[in-house]
Image (cartoon, rainbow, N blue to C red):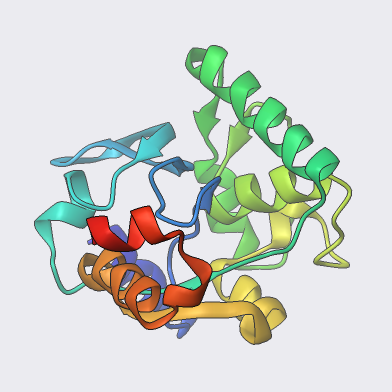
Length: 183
């Protein structure tokens, strides 16, 4: 329901953003609801594309983008996320910021985030400058606009890992012989 309301209000196709540290989206982080049936208990979460909200709705559409990073940038991103993991109880959902971003108003205090604000913050901390606006003004659709040439997948989230397996089979030249036999 919150996603539908956001899409209705913004008129944009995307209502959520996460950041992953791996191509399979096993290390996937964002700010969203913590429990399936309570859209108001939100905060920093480790998402799983097969369980929770994503697991309940097999028709969730997504776009997955790959941003090239240096080893140093990746390390910074990992350290920033580790900070959130270790201190998850002090980070809260930025409800005020979520409403204010719709009116072009930035709300930042370093402890409250909404999904796209969090992802923008993490990427910015690594030294990558995707946007010329403050993290608190970045919306999910902004990632699509900025990264559309880096999209590696568009479709049902529930079919994403199958897509990866098909890509690996199609690109056997990139796989070791041992791994190719395991597929």
